[in-house]
Image 1 (cartoon, rainbow, N blue to C red):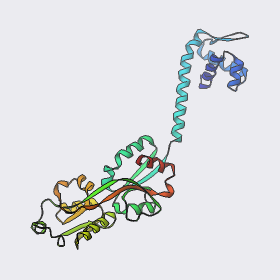
Image 2 (tube, one colour):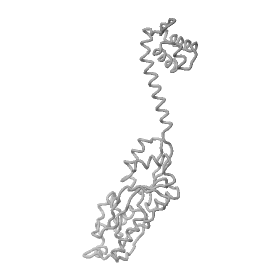
Image 3 (cartoon, helix red, strand yellow):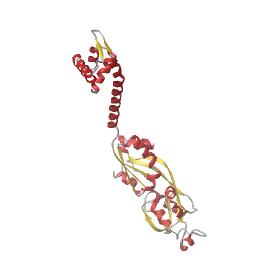
Image 4 (cartoon, rainbow, N blue to C red):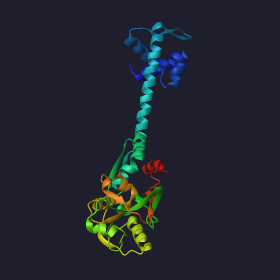
Amino acid sequence: MNIKSLQLFLHLCNSKNFSQTAQKMHISPSALSRLIQRLEQELSQPLFIRDNRSVELTTSGRKLLPVASRIVAEWQQLQQELTEQDQMLKGKLTLFCSVTASYSHLPNVLNQFRQHYPQVEIQLVTGDPAQAVNKVLHDEADFAITALPANLPNKLTFIYLGNVSMSLISPLITSPGLQALLSPDIQWDKLPFILPEYGTARENADKWMKSQKIKPNIYAQVAGHEAIVSMVALGCGIGIAPDIVIENSPIRDQIQKLPAAAVEPLTLGLCCKQSRQQEPLFQALLTLFK
């Protein structure tokens, strides 16, 4: 017994005519008759009562009919699922972002993406967000979550995700020397600053200091906002960092925000090369972010 025999059997049950079934199923009448006879031999039961004008089902044929229908339907469903699976998107996408963004902005979107496209591999690379634009430009990442730079390269597409506020922070427990600079009045020019090495966050920090007429005493310039929070918690100085990094830091209870004029927030988004955004894999991911 095979699927083809069952399909012929089902068609013959509907047509009740060997010639019609043979024609529709693209098989000779003699071959059709042989296949039906073989099916009857396998079941050891006659399936049809034949005469010169019509074909009628026997009791055994009527019992086989729902079984054959179910088997053929399940077979066709399996074929469709396998075909759809073969047509599903496959490949690999590399996404670059900061450690904080990897759990603050990505989980919901990537969970949806994995459900829709399980055969696409997502490689997540974390690092200094100031490197994000260059990572995409140099094809070291397909996508990156990044702050919008002052001058976005024309080659890139940027999809807005939200604004991220920034704050000045100091250690919760300060050394006597640092405490003397913080109170009763903050002596900005003498305070040791820990700042981003470069990138949009550094640009915003520089704008703020210029607006406040502060000539900073820079203690350290570091890559990665998480490192700034850590160094401040250790008592090395004060820092400027995104609030989302501060609030998600495991050592957030060891720092405090300083009362000061607001630093310009970061505009966070997803970027990729414009030349690649029409590729199926890119379109699939971009759709979830829009």
